[in-house]
Image (cartoon, rainbow, N blue to C red; front, side, top):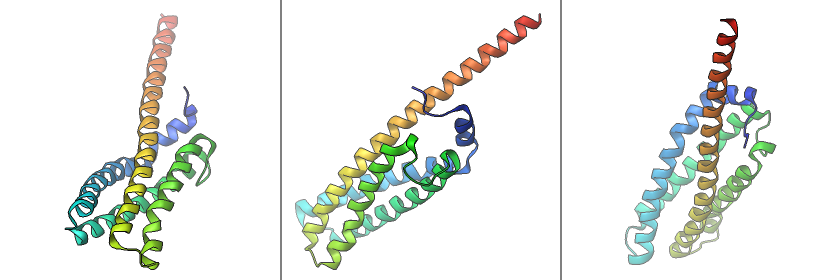
Length: 165
C-alpha cells in the first residue's frame, strides 16, 4: 500500500517536524502510562489524587503539543493542516482524543467529583490508545514503503550501471 508519493516521502524524510513527532510520541506514551497508573491507583484506593491530577494535565499538554506540531507537519507534507485525505482517519481519531481529553476542563468547570473526572480520563485514555495504534500502524507502513522505494532505487541504479557496461 502506497502511503506517500515519492515527493511527499521526500518532504516527510526531510522535515524537522517528522523528528519533532518522533521525539514527542514516545514522551507522550510514557506520560500516558504513568498517568494511567496514577489514575487507576486513585480510582482503586482513593489515594494519590494530586499526583493523578497533575499527570492528567501533563498528558493533556503533551497531546496539545503533538497535535499542533502534527498539524504543521501535515501542512508541510500534504498541503493542509488537518484532515488531509492521506491522514483523514488518523486526524479523526486525534480529534476524538482531543475532545475527550479536554472534557476534563468542562467536567472541572461543572464541579464533577474527583472520581467522576478520573473515570472520564479513563475514557479519554482509551481514545488516545486507539489513535496511538492508528499512528503506529501508519509508521510501520511508511517504513515498509520507504524501504521498498530504497530497494527499487538501488535495483534501478544497478540496472542502469549494468546497461552502461
